[in-house]
Image (cartoon, rainbow, N blue to C red; front, side, top):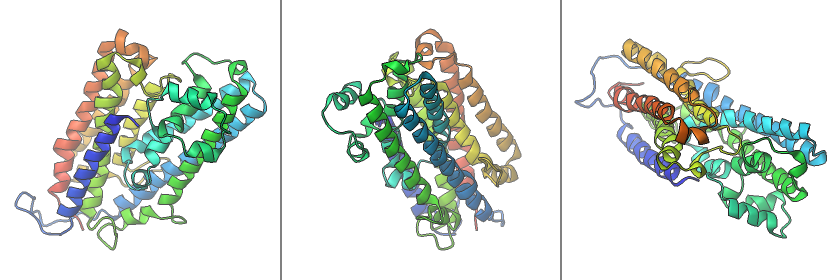
Length: 362
């Protein structure tokens, strides 16, 4: 996992811990607005947990199953058509994963699933050492490898290699063996993540939905809502100040996420779409989102933030593909995207989070 990402998550955990401790009671501080009205976040939290998070992880797990079927078909018949189907399945699986990075808390963090699924940049030398070894590349063996030797970007490297269309005839039997095993490992991780939030599994969804009314994780609704906002802050920070800025500032293509597939811009847009999903309370279906709360307190802020999020998605999309070339030849477009995402982060930190902290919840 990228060192920046580890630091960002660590900071988020510290913030979240402080919020949980500080928001456990119902007393209103001197800094809070004493309006005499409280907001019942029960529906919003339930919709976040189920309509957004669980629905996203379910889609991720389903698409990971499609990806596994596609790479097995490629192994059985390594044709160009099967390779391209597997490549498209990889890109399709990336979408729900990248959108889910707006809520990298709970089981995805505590069970180590984020680094197991999505560590980058990939270490080419270590990958080649696996391919050159005499080890049998079973799923159990791959599961025990370093995080940078499995997951999304190992699969990406094996399917795409250098961003140009790879020839199926160039893929070795050893690479196919590694490809199938690491995809099986990825599918096991997505299933574990789905079950962690699902009622038939560990049901972390209920811990969020029941915040303040018996949840062992969130002693108040305010604590859970602040967790949601900090999840959005974390990914906005990572996109602006890590995923885009690091390779841009260093002019270093090895720091680019999804560099082999030329999928970086889609990844970054989906990260911000994840913020949009959480804020609006939707994924495949609509629910009650944070926008319902914010608009009731400050309609102008709600309207501005929605515009800022869409502007960030559009600014990222305006970067010419591939991103790894634009960090040197289209620097103005890259800087505009950094600025747009930073604005989203700023509004979350300076306007929306304080609004939540100063409000009363049931």
